[in-house]
Length: 453
Image 1 (tube, rainbow, N blue to C red):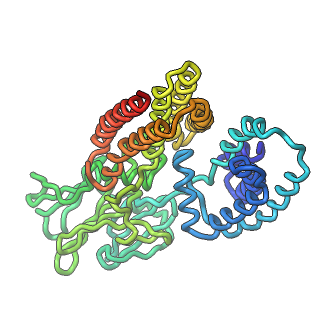
Image 2 (tube, rainbow, N blue to C red):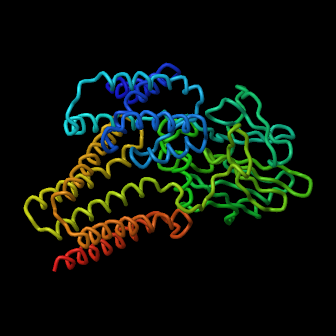
């Protein structure tokens, strides 16, 4: 367990590679079976070993399994990335060692093992592989008959000979080209010009040589926020310049205009989001980076998709539901011991909301994430004990549980609406979440109290 803690939280960040990756798999397979056995009833050591092996194989051999594991860990420990890698199956024989250790270990009381080992084990296994660098369109320019965009993070250029419809890679050329420009006019039509709006995903056009401007293409700021969550979970320097502002890691940075048969095309470099292309008919479309680092419309991140990129909000909603559940138990049984347990649970749930803050980089984020995980563990342990000592009837327990569930749903619902495009702004969704959450919690607590009278 100590090896897993040190390797995943320190060594992997300092020296990512084959050795630390495989060491993490080996240590994780030793820690996971006893952790599962603690969560299962009675003696379930054999089942825990088999379940660990099956889940590990599914995660490491299928993209679906890896994505499911990534989403699960993101709910617990902030933004996480679990990668499918069949070579990691080489570590599976370690499960035999885990079984041998369990069979030859001295028996320790279950309560002692739970209180000591569970927090450390959960903290150890929540570390995952570092999120790999992602490609970003740094600049775009015209090179003869071709349109070229420089891809930061991959050391390649992408080249299009058909006005941005298709792209092919080539090795990047350190020839000083590719600085890009923020405004350009159509060759031979000096009155039609285009320019980017600094700090936004927005292009304006002019028909009078730049004296007046009107919007030509734009991604609303609320949708840019969604793209930032999907593509830039950590601040990412698109241009590689000092003093980079991480508030807007996705924005239009340069553009190029090319005369084509039947009109002209405009290509805009949008950093992590790829490029935007205006065809000769005047229609705009976004092209995103695919698995092969190429650009295509099919790989563009959707701007509106229900339940997308709201994992942090879901985690906070669950914590709010747990807190209201504890409060409902308290109003149902107003005793001193119950009140103390309720206070511990509510405070722990509030502290556990630090988990989403630990999704960034740096030692401060690590400390925040660790404290959030420990607070969540304390909240769950106290809540389980509270449910046992409160001595509630089935009707009272149902009312308390319902108050918690409906509060969690009320907190999460506005953010799911935001992910689908309504409301457009995340701040509006936050306000709605607070109002709905408080109203639902108050209603649930009143209902829970009335079940005792």
